[in-house]
Image (tube, rainbow, N blue to C red):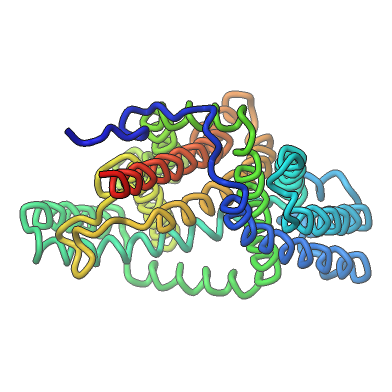
Amino acid sequence: MPPTTPAATGAVPATRPDSAPAATARILRPFAVLALVTSGALTVFGFVWWLVPGWNPYASPSSRSLASAVLDPAQFAATVVAIGAVGAVVALAGLSPAAVGRRAPLLAGAAALLGVAAAVVLGDAGTVTFAGYLFGFSAVIAGVLTTAVLVVRAPRLGVPLLVLLAGLVGVAVWWAGLSWAGVTTFLAEFGSKLVDNAMLILVSAVSVTAVLAWTAVAVIAGRTTREVRRFEGWLVRHRRLVTVLAALGPLPYAFVRASWLTPWPLFAPPVDELPPAVLATGLMLGSGAVAASVLTLGLILPWGRVFPRWMPRIGGRPVPARLAVVPGLAAATIISISAVPIFMMSLDAGSLIEIVVFDLVLPLWFWGPMLALAVWAYAAARRDEDRAVSAGAEFG
């Protein structure tokens, strides 16, 4: 009879330490180094903006975080410097041998506060916008390639998928008016915006990395405490529910964009008045939302642990946990730090009903944290499964 793993039963002992202090310190070290590097970068950004306010991308009304909306440029720059400086000190503390000892709860709390501070001060709606464009475009390309591979290696699945894809393209072209000119216009405009907003994109990338690093430090250090281990055990036991809820996050937006292929487009002009470039943008972003939902479900489906057989070269091999955890946490961070700015934008939507509808169509406030919890549950479950396999191999 095969041994029963904790992940299989969902029972993760709350009193068992994550690992020996040396092993925990080894896991913590790269994230503390990453936090140190990004903290240094934020400090440099803050000083530059203090000395040259015109270089501050958050000074523009179109690029506003919660902090930049209430602070003047000098105060905002000083706040960024403070976050970077304190972050460097805490990161150095995370690199010390005592980081996983009695000081671990203090380190976890400080890292969590720094992550929240960086998100509030530097979180901008443009972060999720640019990320959505890049992911949507990648999702379209990946979808076409995946369909082509499935047609050859798994035709029972690939052929119906090809018919569905061809039908969607046909509706988009002959009914909704999608054209090649519209696609190329969108790509040209998007490329131009990437260049024009290069500084903001760089700052956003550093901010996302900093929040991700501090979150990882907080979780790893926090797992030395009984309370965090109990919460993690609860997450693993309820990971299916948490993951399904996370997968629902992007679906309202996908539904709205799919309506553009019908006679009843939502939040858009009539079909015959919809510019092809706008249609191409909406359909691409909607495709990305669907792909995000499907990939999230992979955290609890078999192909999230073993590559499907139809995949060339890697089919049948175990999925490295990091391949799901790192992109998943990055996505959750991007969504979460953009949630407050997006909510601030919704306040300009008009009436209370319009504000509520806006925040239901773009539920970043729900989607980001829920996705982070789903990825955390996946990582914990995979870790416990690997331990159970190792223990079975050693004592079996």
